[in-house]
Image (cartoon, rainbow, N blue to C red; front, side, top):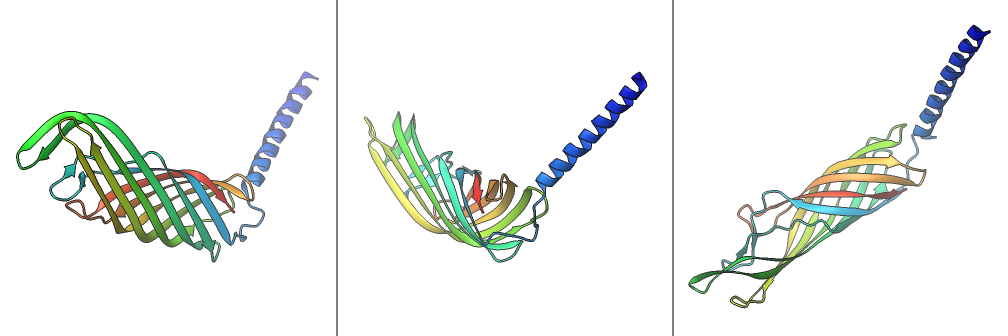
Length: 226
């Protein structure tokens, strides 16, 4: 009798494991892998980083040792899918940085003076991009994708220091060619909603550095609506 109960428990455990595995497999599969939405919309939080920032040049030998790096920001896009794996994406992102600090400020008029005082730096980066997106749709919840986008970016920066020794107000803005090369992963939560994580290299060809290029990296997390 004890042997029978032991065997029964083993069979029940194995059957339960198989049923749970089958259920998870069914949940992870699409009802029809050939189906694809015509339009998809993404909105999410975005951060902007800059590699080896060369500083910001305001003209007339006015250089500020700063970058356009920004944690606050957002990205939104619309994708028109023409097949299961190919679509055209229109993408917009905005990143903002408002920094208040105290440190050395130098000015040459024509003699050079360096003082320690308060300053404020505000930067803005807006990307307007479009290009193809390629998805590796499959029977699971996980859909990797890559994109290659091109367009233009509007960058602006304002540097102010109110004194008491030096009183400076510097401002610049630029409209430049920009790209975004990268990709990410969609994790389907339901038929209409997925979670999206993406990262791309976002070069912006502004005219305030030695190379003429700002090497940005965008990281975005948000929701994709099908």
